[in-house]
Image 1 (cartoon, rainbow, N blue to C red):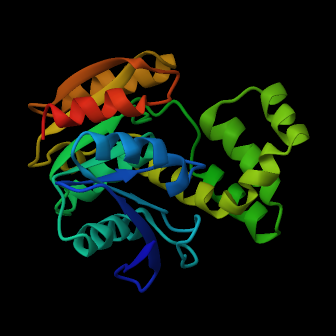
Image 2 (image 1 turned 60 degrees about the horizontal axis):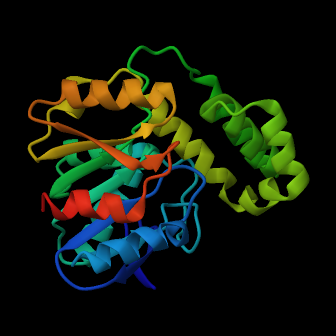
Image 3 (image 1 turned 90 degrees about the vertical axis):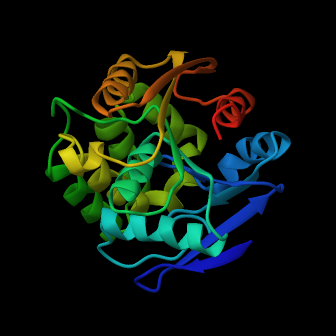
Length: 257
């Protein structure tokens, strides 16, 4: 494990696996660098140096109260600088939104691979109140309740599934990530109506999605690929229900980097 220091002084933990051109993976909500280990191994097998990292308020990384999407973009920039530059960035779910946002701010991401970004183009989802309500729960140390609220109101999981997760101890296991749900909610809300700057990035963009995934993610992925000039849409049959297949994903990257 290594440490990169972000622009605001926050320490960001990252790990490298393999040798070759660097590919930085940006995780989605409720996950840490450890969850990307199978992907890192697949990228290493494909000839890359995979870089996985804990986004702020997760795992071994630090945090700063009231962090904003721009701070997370700075975190990604710090990791890229620490590893000496990259050939590509792969973002999954909210991590795909973060990767695109960082590139739009001039972070040198190299080629972008955006896996099932949950962009609410039509603004039909939750509003400004969700990040505030999540932060209130975190501030009063109701971390499991924050996880449950995020799963229900942001992810859209049914109540019975969330309660099953509570009973099984899943919410307890995820409780240390409660603060990060605030940041994911802010990031996703910020780009529910993508502006021209977000969509005008000067790097190759490949949007990936599974053939079997949630309808909202089919719509958002396909539309993002259509909205970004020159972007390519790649359907990965091995990736099912918002779970990117590590080997198939690494193959897509290897064919383009």
